[in-house]
Length: 237
Image (cartoon, rainbow, N blue to C red; front, side):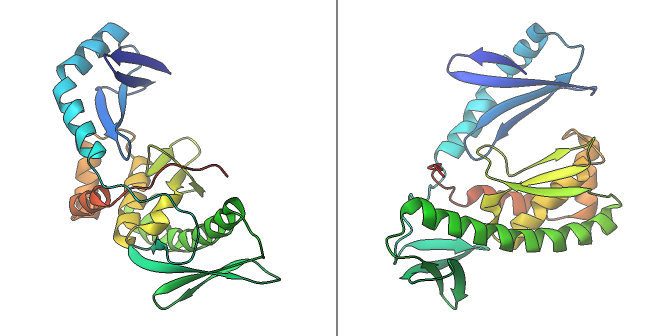
């Protein structure tokens, strides 16, 4: 992957078998990426990005002003989110199985005595993954039929700059673990977005037309997702 530097802005350049150049500023950190035709030279791409510099800075400023969640310590009384709803965490130390249970307006985290931050975080992550995987399966099955595509595999990862990604060759999609904390309509939007990328790689007019056809309110779902607080990236486990 090549890069272009414009002052303090570093732009990733991805060459693809496409006809037109596409510029993206990616949530949640405002990373800049250009997808360009394979034969387009770097100087031409640089000129294009310079012409879009004001727009890039505006998009990055919006992400910079987006609310951030407080770093998590996994102690009783903290706020944690699931499917867009806020819950209070209650940590319960005991012998035996470490697990998480949802109780009305609280999340109960069962851990061993003297458990540390890392071990508590691992238990919570496993729980979030299991819930997210369940809804991913439901939405993928629903939208594969509606869109007319076949996804061979779905993956869940912790990603800093993307809500989701698609591998057209392997027919797989990867989704950000943080989507487990967002409203289900936001998760569904990202899944539809990535499934349509199995048909059209670029964010061109064809892609937008397919999004409009299959999910008419996708823009409002996208805007909701981008307005929500994003987490601090303190992953050390």
